[in-house]
Image 1 (cartoon, rainbow, N blue to C red):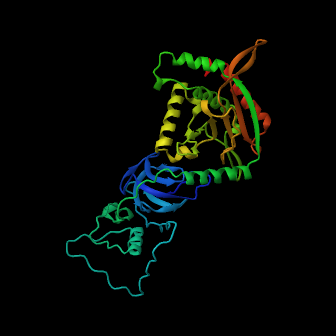
Image 2: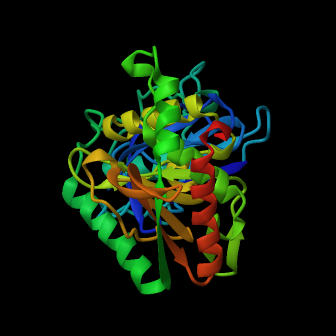
Image 3: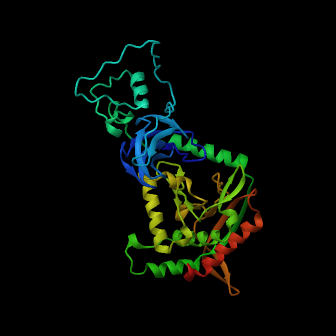
Length: 384
């Protein structure tokens, strides 16, 4: 029997509200299946499960606010002996008192001849007693028809909350405040000639319809991902035991939300993706981040973050590292500037590339090599 618990969807997440179950007791689940929707300060997030098996019991009813690490469900292998469920963790907030049984409870009524005995999970019995719900007449959807938490009437199902700009600002403030307190940042910047890369983008876009065209951000992200793969000290996490390298280059792509704030869901193995696939992944993340539907793993898997200010942003950015990551890259707005090419000053489209690094995991020398490598790759865009 496996315990499925509330995951942490951010460095400063303490609890989340279970909005919706996507599974019921008896359903088979596979690794990566979406099993629930949880509301956090970042919005409604789809939660995946990472164990295969059969759902035995849902320990939390929709609408409950549950702390990180609390039991959500029990998952077991099909046909395995069912063990008594552990006590469910009470949701955050005041709850009705539960009356303790007397020392000599009256004998339970015997079922009528031919009637099926009432089966109820321990968690459902506790919740029903606390809320004063009669179990007689309820239809159970658990194993062998047992009544479980999901079968208890709770009125209309809770609706997903809308975007909460104040909650988002609080979450950002908490994460960035922690970052500036705990992480010894160092900053580097380098101005990069983007003319060769932009000319390649223009050639690739010739004859394409607008939805199929590549954006400059795609080739910049591609160069960054390839360079990060060669600089493992900047790709990973800092924890109690020191630096832990990432299991791949999973780039967190910073997305500005229309209501304010931002999220940085991960593009897994970005260094292995060709330009068109990377552009598709970026568009998909932006659409789901702004419209809802991000997965929990996308908010926790990023090994380094990249932010691009686009054509309306500032010329440079000094980004703040998102813990527990150890680096973040920023691309400023593309601008035209005088540039020396072959001894002659010519107009050139350039952008300022910046890096914020964690001095506990790397130093300015390694950070400088990363920026230089990104620059070199962008001067040879045919290799991207």
